[in-house]
Amino acid sequence: MSVIDRAKTHFENIGIQSVEVPEWKDDDGKPTIIYWQPINLFEKNKLFKKSDNMNDVSILADIVVMKSLDKDGKKLFKLDDKMDLMTKVDSDVLSRIATRMVQVISPDEVKKN
Image 1 (tube, rainbow, N blue to C red):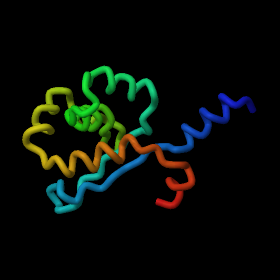
Image 2 (image 1 turned 90 degrees about the vertical axis):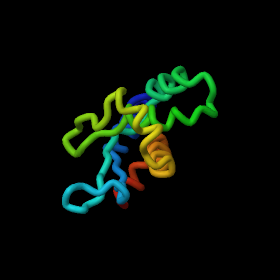
Image 3 (image 1 turned 135 degrees about the vertical axis):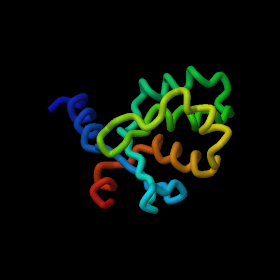
């Protein structure tokens, strides 16, 4: 197997990741679970181009809008939701979610969870 094939296999094996958001309870009182595919360089580049200043915290909302999926793989947010995420959502919760989304974990760590 070539090095590029090994690298691609590694990335594929990371698989779908998720985070529980206990602050966002559903109608049954259960925490919301947000899923996402690992972030790739193409997506990171897109995010960096959107932000002229890497200190611009609006990138957190961009990450959550771009990556958030439901259990069926459907997008949870639209671009129209960005302003609400930035102004009407707990910034610490949003930051926690976005940070988890950009941290690529190893396949071994995925298996542990």
